[in-house]
Amino acid sequence: MDPDEIMQLIVPRLNHSGPFKCQWKDCQYSGHFSRKAVLLRHIEAMHINPGAYDCPEPNCFRSFNRKDNLMAHSRNVHRDGGQVSAS
Image (cartoon, rainbow, N blue to C red):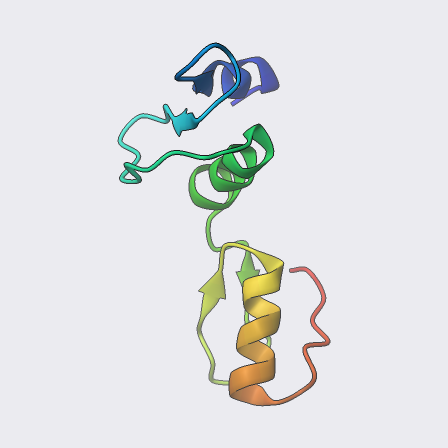
């Protein structure tokens, strides 16, 4: 999907000032986003690149849509301080 197509999905409901709703085909999220940046993060994490971050720990097969979620998992489950590089 090119940037122009992504920008067409960012359609504010009221007077170009939000709230913003995801227009991605078959998106299961029914809520609204208060800012365009939050909607863009949703589109990237849920539609364009979900599961982009795999846990590097042996025998852990979890994957996450955002690096901060992987880091929190690493801190809470594996207790390694969250030092994780992008996959």
